[in-house]
Length: 91
Ligand SMILES: [Zn+2]
Image: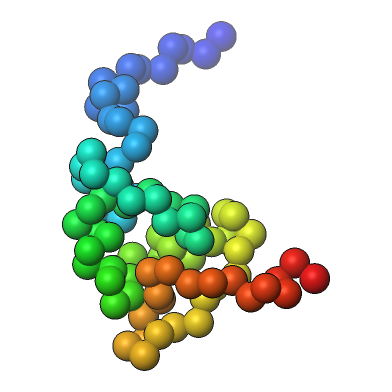
């Protein structure tokens, strides 16, 4: 017989839909379908010219989870906020 696990109240109250990048429970959300992510308005605005370096591990993990390729970096050496997957990707 296993002892019952202690109930952690903090895991119970944590909303499921926090921003994936900064964990903010912002109600203004942006879906980023190319990364299969949903982020808050602030993170979306800050990523206008590319996602910040700190976000890259999260983005890479999201892409890997979805079986997607890592997009080419933009002129600033950052991952683009939006990109068009190659049309022949599925071939
Ligand atoms: Zn955020």
